[in-house]
Image (tube, rainbow, N blue to C red):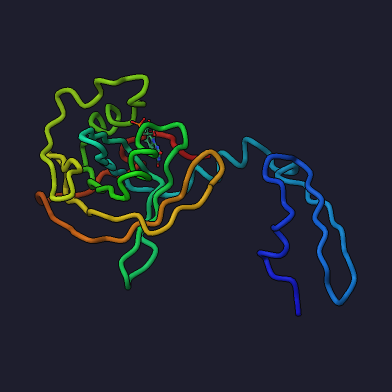
Length: 197
Ligand SMILES: Cc1cc2nc3c(=O)[nH]c(=O)nc-3n(C[C@H](O)[C@H](O)[C@H](O)COP(=O)(O)O)c2cc1C
C-alpha cells in the first residue's frame, strides 16, 4: 500500500545533484525533486564525521598467486549469527578486484603502537608496488597474509557486495579466526589518521 524505500529510490540518479522521482501511490502519480547534500556545510560534515570512533585494521587478500594488504578503518561487525562483517573498499584500490575475484579476505587487527605499519600499508599498491617489502607475514589457510605483528586475525568469505559511492561495501562471513598475541588494538584516535569526513 504505502511506498517503501526501494520504490522511492528506484528513480534516484546517484550522479546528479537533483533527481526527479515519480512514484505511483493510491492510483495517482507523484513526482518529487530530491536535492542531494545541497544543504550540507562541508566543514561541519567533515568535522562531525571525523568524531566517529574507529579501529584500525590491515586487510589482506590473495588472488592468482598475488597478495596485497591495505589499512582500513571502514570496518565493523554487523551480525552475531552468522558472524558477519562489513568492510568498505575504495573502487580505485588494487585490492578490490582481487577480493571480488577470489571472494576471500583476512582482517588483521593492528596492535596499539602500530601506527607506522598502518601508515605503510595505507599507501596505494598501484602507486607503491613495493609497499609490502620488509613487512613480516605468513600465509593463512586461505592464502591471505597474516601479519606477524597483528593482535589477531579474522578470515572471511564474501557474502554480498553493494555500491557505496566511491567505494564498494563488502559483507563478509567469518569462517576462521586466530589470536597472534596479547595486547591492545590500534585505534584511529591513537594513530591520529583522518580517513573519514
Ligand atoms: C588510516 C587509513 C585508513 C584507511 N581506511 C581505508 C578503508 O577503510 N577502506 C579502503 O578501501 N581504504 C582505506 N584506506 C586506504 C588504503 O589503505 C589504501 O591506500 C587504498 O585502498 C589502496 O590500497 P591498495 O591499492 O593497496 O589496495 C585507508 C588508509 C589509511 C591511511
